[in-house]
Image 1 (cartoon, rainbow, N blue to C red):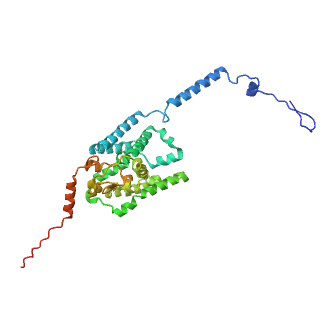
Image 2: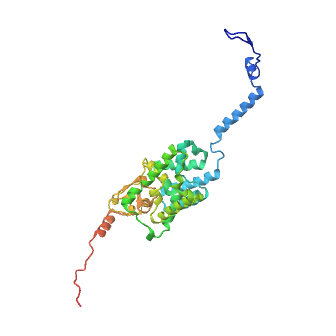
Length: 338
């Protein structure tokens, strides 16, 4: 091949020969043999077949799927039937199976992971995908059903309350409660902000003590936080759910879209039984702060006969209120002098 530079000196001769793929293409010949093309076709067919058939979580863990399906069935049965016995059985299964055995509980870390990696992060584990789907669907329909019966730490708090003597329980002053319940929303905002702006920083473990108790953390700081929260739960029912839980805050915001809420009745304008029994302090006479309601069924199971019907007649409530407000009888007989 001769290379001539215009206006230059002598011609430059370069020996160059086309070989390999270039020569094959120049001759308009096939680059690969029929055998090689066949192998590629087979490999590609296998890949796309696996992609269409094999699920993203790999081999399906059928034992876990079946057991989790049974638990989710118990949760729905307890919620829909308003049966207290079924709910306590469900809480026990949730605590020991999801909590201590499988470590399969939801966390605010799942929300931060979704923000960082997208919703596809849930498809790598089928049981987690089942819990996430169940939680989102039930929350959008009824509210925080997850917090009621599918959260292991919520179950632990309920068992603590059940076996705590009443003399140790403390009624949080209303003014403090009304302000403190927004702490968890601030915690949620902080965690989500850091996840979006500084993804390398992780602080959720300091606000979610169930990771400490169920994973048996070796951090003395995390154990100190856990012990402090459990002691608070002894004296204040569902203390963690009320004031600290960032996941509960997220579900509380989502529950504002729920169309099927607990109905109040005329008796609620006078009676405070439900208000006193509510474990999260969500009831204010005839009103319910629904984002704080964990759908525990206490007011619906023990105090409501049918949906929207109080088991206590209005006459009984009125008489009870009148008796409480009655003026005590005073003995006007003068004392006998000695």
